[in-house]
Image (cartoon, rainbow, N blue to C red; front, side):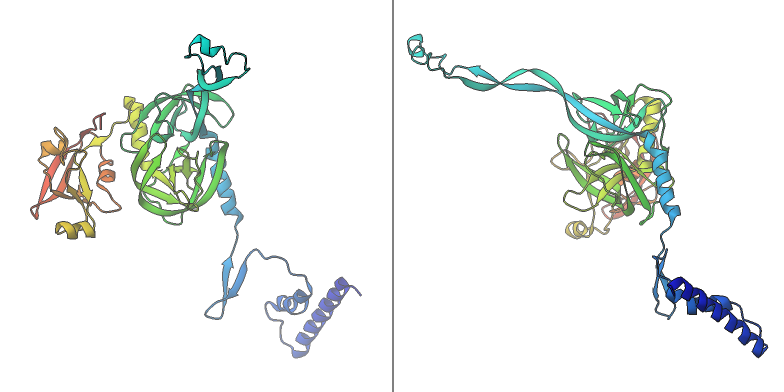
Length: 424
């Protein structure tokens, strides 16, 4: 008798026995009776299959669920990627570089003719490097995303920093366009470029103001400058990060108020979007930690929105400007300088110049060297809420109120923000 017949026989006997027992005792069969019979007599004989979820005994003696995969989450990620991918582009960077060849030459040309004759019949040939014109060659790549149907594209400033290079945009449908750099942000690693096209797909811009640790993050970009629209997924693993980034041709740059994510951001992903599960752009991928595993950074999209609108209305990125050099205060600096606060900035000059720049809004408002600025319009300046990030919330022409400590006396100073000079 095979297993199937055994199971049928057991079920039949159990059912008859259960019903008969109920009739003899004149008691109705209780709820779940047949389910209990199944669990007791049938389930042990059925080969186990991988469950959709697993349980372990919990501390209170019950069952605690430890894993429950959901197809809804997977489908949401796929939908977000499908929605945004058509508007993600790749950027190739090309430049006219010298063409170097090996050219024949004679090392004896400077010798007198009577000496040269001794070497002429030796069939000796000498070569040296020489330039034979120039050739347009691809030297790098990056990513970006389309924010207007007529071809405005957001990317990183460090992707398009070289004013002597030419830039080509490759869209998701395989079309190529020459790109013009419209604006490079003086404060942040953001640039806006333009291609001549119409009816292009665009991304949806989200809100980076309410991001939470552990929230799903999806990165899309031109990984390694070779693999277009590469997707990686992870979570937001940190907020309000400050890092010092470096790269060929751009030196080092301090980046503030960044999103940290473990969604893989590889070389070439720079300028691509960081998405939430709605398929909305919440950040611009900007940097990765060399030698680390899955530590990348993105510029919050709320910092980028003003730059996009500025380019649309003025053709350039207009940035508000205060005009001070300063040291960020922490507990060590507060102790060293005998300050009464451990947050804020100490207005102080450096080898780069004076503490308060000449003819700046700060000078016009009466800010002085050694002042301690602790608040901007009621918001405290902290390690995770820098002076620069607070200033970027406002526009040129706005009047802001700074809370300042001068000789340990608290005062308020009103400042009218001006446009940042192009030479700074």
